[in-house]
Amino acid sequence: MRNRENKLIVALICVVMALSSVSARIARGEASFAKLWEMRRTIPLVAKDGVIVAGWPNMENQTLFACFDSKTGNQLWKEGKREPINWDAIRADNFQREGDRLFVLQREGDKYSFNCFNKNDGKQIWSLGMLDDINPEKMPFVDGNNFYLIQHGIIQCFDSRNGQLLWKAGTGSGPLKRMAGTYKGLQFWTGNHVMCIDLKTKSQLWATPQNDCPLAPKNLDGMTGNTPCFVGDYIFFLGHDCDVAGGLSIFCRNIFTGKTKVKLDRPFGMVTTKEFFISVVSTGHGNFSMYAFDPESGTKAWETRVERTVREFMFSIEDMFVRTKFGENQTTLAILCDTKTGRELSVTNLGEGVTNIIQDGELLFVESKNKTTCYKISR
Image 1 (cartoon, rainbow, N blue to C red):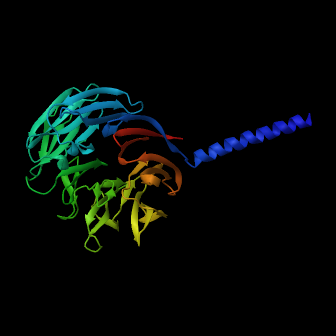
Image 2: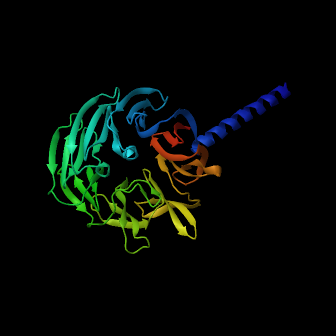
Image 3: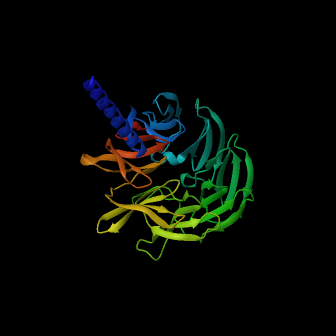
């Protein structure tokens, strides 16, 4: 009887220890990426809300656009474009997605058209054609039921459901090129400087000096990540800084006043979370560190030494973030890290020849060697 009780106690202890181990792993936020699906000859252009839009050239000098279910990889529709298209120029920056609508900027001779398609069947809803002073660098910005573009210094707001003009603002001059985003009731425009507009009054709150910053760089001298970006009541953007070598720094400004709080070193990779601006920077002599900057306190929450690769992909996912680095034999490794501490949670091998990575929530779409692979966080 006592032996049976002892065995039962041991069994219960083992169960408790196993559950404790699982609970501890969950509490630590440990997770990794699991492969969902893989397809050939697909170039992902945009992914959002469970749908991925992709394209590829065929043998007849056409460009084929297709829409897929992100979780299964099943094709929803496919449509061919007869006009010869500069394929190298058709990337994610030419596409946007909002609800059931897909927005595409296409070249028409020496001008462009901005087109709206139904996400479910690929049918065109409306087209705004013969746009001059518009190009992929000045891509219209879709924000809910509105989209914005700037032509010859005039800011224009359209209804994204039907393409109808709603209002105009501006003086007809100036170097502003595109809208960087809306945040907390404010609208931010970039060109060679940053301008903030109050959406309620449509009036300017503040602007940085002319020639203050490059246009929303995404890969400047190996740097990846988007600027401007936002954390709390602060905006971060890459700006000209004559006080540092290389002439570029990250400026942190209050979104309501435009007042500079701090300047940070030019990053080689960066990502924002709800609380932090996370950056990979050089510390000299071939060494690099990664840190999380808290704009509210103006201090670093944590900092750790890292290996820097040629190209840093960085993404924010809930209470975690992802950064990539090269592994052996030119493979790319996706490292999942804890936002609060910077601690590595897991490492996933994404394979060889990775050229681009697109994120949609907990999904990563990895483009490499004429194939696209979808990974999902596995907890």
